[in-house]
Length: 307
Image 1 (tube, helix red, strand yellow):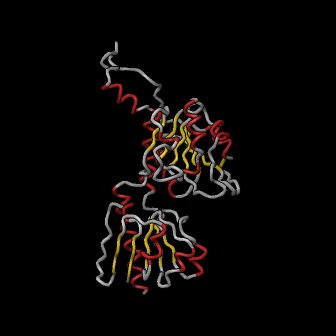
Image 2 (spheres, helix red, strand yellow; image 1 turned 30 degrees about the vertical axis):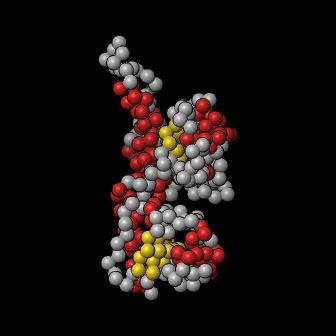
Image 3 (cartoon, helix red, strand yellow; image 1 turned 60 degrees about the vertical axis):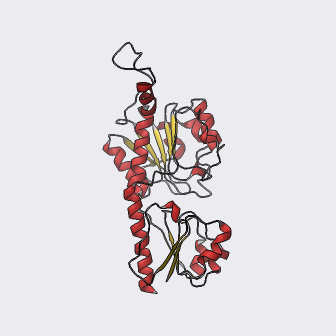
């Protein structure tokens, strides 16, 4: 059984299969024009971010399973896959804890200005202080603050649990296009009362540009925006403007609308105040990577038994 991983470079932990009848081929990366050739004859295709469209799926009649090395399946033409009898399986819960911890870590970093204070310890500001400590930006506790969660799937709920354990009050937003639950607030209302907003919704026509100029204007002047979902949920130019004008307190961004981003992406500028930008690594704790690898191996072995 031929198994192909189109972008194995996205997962540092290699996949090892104990069955000698599994022919495994791992490509570090795959360009769109290479997909048809590489999946030819494959029973299983593993992909993280490489897209599989209708023509590519139809080109490989032996294909029985697409295993997505991620929580979402938006890079696969699910309608065509279903028509062709191709199963599409993802790994929905491998990184929930890792992303949730990243959210809380960035909250600590921004509300307590960890980076600024660490720099002050070594750049002369502490040594030149008249008192035993150097006082700079206002330090805010997480306990007693309000976290607004937009998207209450596995990651949103995992983040909420950690936040409540720290004494934060958690409020949920009404999901775009859905009926409001009793414990949910309309997004506009949530934006106006939360001390921090964390985004965990999928990218759809309803959520693209969800946080733009109008949404940012509703946030408290010291509120923090965190995006570990999809880059296009946030209008990058509007966020840069809000941070430069100090209409919000800060932002932690782990995902951008283009990845890898061009060097001149607006959110990669080095002079944006109170912006903590990381290169799509919220999911990537070693434990999460190991769980993802184990899930992919199990999906392949299950397909081998079925074949």
